[in-house]
Image (cartoon, rainbow, N blue to C red; front, side, top):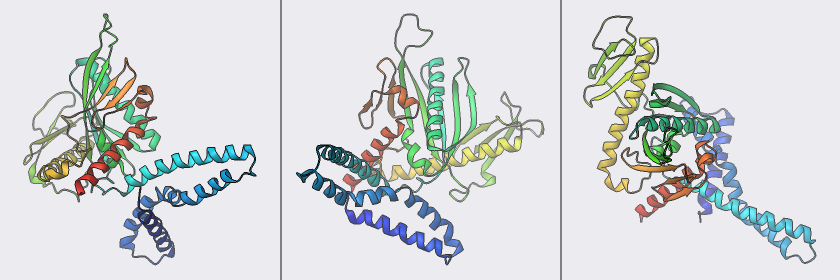
Length: 357
C-alpha cells in the first residue's frame, strides 16, 4: 500500500503550483519548467484525490450495507459500488506507483523508433509493417504525433526498415519498453502445407536528443551526398539530394534520401544521428553502473527477445515478465497495449525497490 503522505504531497504540490502560476508573480525564466511540472502533476491529480477519498467513500458504503432498514435494491447498488470502488483503488494505486517511480532523465523526451526486419525473409518484412501499424494505432489512441523519417519497402509489400519520430508528453517513458527482438509465429499466405513459420523484427527506441543534450562538432562529421536510389560518394553536384553522415569518433552512420531536398535529408539524418550517438553514450554509462541494470526492464537491449506474437493461438507473450494476453488482435490494434506496458512499469518498480533494500 502507498503511504498516504506521498499522495498528499502530490495534491499539495499541484495546488501550490496552480496558485503560483495564476498569480502572475513568477519569474519568466522559471515559468516554462513550472508549467511543465504543473501539467505533469495534472495528469495524475484526479487519481490522487480518488485515492485519498477511498476510506471515506468505503466507510459510507459500508454503513449503507450495515443499515438493516435499507431497501434490498439500495443494498445491492451499494455492494456493486463498493466492489467497483475496491477495483478502482487497486488501479489507482498502480498508476500512482508508476508516477512516483524515480524518473529516468530521458523519460519526458520524445522518441525515435527504428524497426528492422530480422530473420524470416519476406515474412519478417511483413511483420515489420505489422509492428509499425500497431505503433501507429497506439499513437493515435494516445493523441501522440507520429512522423515518418525513413521507410525502406520490401518486394512483399512490407518494410525492410522504418524509422519514425513520436512527439507528445513522456513518450520515451512509455515506448522504451518496446526495444528488443519481437518474434512472430504464424502461417504465411504462401505456405501450402499449413506449417507455422517463425520470423523476427528488431525494435530500437531512442530518446530524441536535443543539441543541448549532446554536443557534436562539425569537424567530427563526414557528410557525403549521392543520388537517391543508389549508393554514392562525395560529391558537389547540387542535384544529388541523398545524404550520408558519418560520426567519425563513434563510427555511427546515417543515410537519408526520402526527401527531394538535400537540406531536409541532412536535417533528418542529423536528428537520427544525434539520438543514436546520445543513446550509445547513455548505454556506456548504464553498463558502468551494472547494479542499475538489474533494476531496469526497459534497458533497450536490442539482442534480447522480449515478445512473441503467436497468431495460431491468438496470444502475445512478454518474456521479461512472463505475461501472456490471449487477445492478440486487440493488442495489435493498440486497444490493450497499455495493459502490458503498465505491468512492465510495475515490474520495473518492484525491481528498483528490491535494489534499494
